[in-house]
Image (tube, rainbow over all chains, first blue to last red):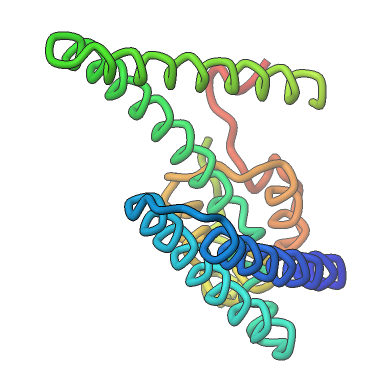
Length: 143
Length: 68
C-alpha cells in the first residue's frame, strides 16, 4: 500500500505540473501568438477545457484518496484488481482492431468520394501500424 | 479450469466481500471466479490457496489439455 501511495503522490505532482504547463501554453497560444484563425483558437480552447476538466477530476480523486485511508484502499483494489486490468487490456486490444477495420473500410469508401481524405486515413493506418510494431518490439524485449 | 472457491467459501461461512478484501481484489472478481467466467492468475491462485489453507491443485481443478 505504501508503494501505491508513493505512486499516487507522483501522479498527483505530474498532473499538477501538466495542468500548469497546459495553462501557460494555452494563454501563450491565445495572447502571444498572433493567430487570426477562429477555428484553430476554438479547437485549442476545446482541447484545453477537456484536458483541464479531466485533470481536475483526477486531482480531486487522488487528493481524496491520499487523505483518507478507506478511499485509498478502495482505489488500490480498483486499480490493482487483476480482472479490471485484464478487462482494460482486452478492451484496448478489441478497440484497436475494430478501429483499424473501420478505418480500412473508410479508406476504401472515401477513395470513391475524396482522394485527399482517403490518403489521410491511409497514412493514419500506416502510422498506427508503425507505432504498433514499435510497441510490440519494445514488449518483446522487455518480457 | 474449475475451482472450489464457492464451495470452500460457503463451508467456512465467509462472504464474497470478506474474501475479496482478504485477497485484495474486487467482489466482482470473486463472483467471476466462482462462476468460472474468469481464470485467476498464478499470484491470485496462490493467495486464494493460502487463504483456504490448501494447495493450488486442491483449489483449482485442471482438466484435459491443461494437464501434461
